[in-house]
Amino acid sequence: TLLRPSKESVMKKLSLILILMLSLFSYAQSSEKAGSDFDKEIAARMIDSSIQRFKIAEDVTIEDAIDSMKLRANLLNFKLVADLPLSDQIKASGEESKHMQILAFCDALIAKEMVEYNIIFAGFLPCRIAAVEDKDGQGWLVTTNMDMMLHAVELPEKLQPMAKQVRDTIYSIVDAGVNGDL
Image 1 (cartoon, one colour):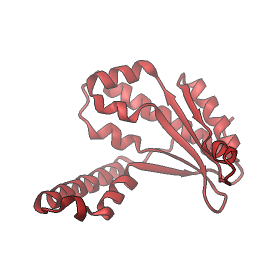
Image 2: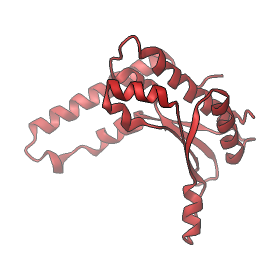
Image 3: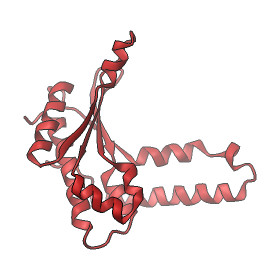
Image 4: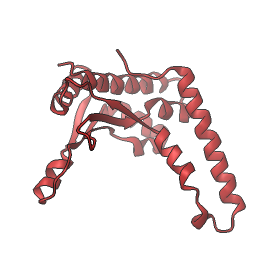
């Protein structure tokens, strides 16, 4: 099953973020000391809403989840363009670390179209999925809230199907990882 929130859920989150952003903007405008009075709680809520976390099934290891995501991406013709084993780098430095690995996937042709339309999309490239282990040893997949990204900018008709394809593909990759679908 595709792990995609309902349209109502997305709209509620978008509305909340818009309200929070407008509140933050209004607050910053009314304060002479906006830099020192910055409301960290509002900023934290905005950041939290822009990220999605998916718990890896109990019978699936992080390594299996990663292998499953790589396989699904390959089947969907999304290229793995980066694999950053951060916990390995930390361990090589002599520090202990829970598993932390960032995988980056991309369809370069879609990326080109999106960035040519609006350069802001370059900040989301490539699509990243982090495979991390929490303090209790539970595996998680963490990625950008693709629905928020999709609805944050008015896209021309030509780009809408491409953006939806990216969203659906990333959610399918995450779904494969969560369930260990090899």
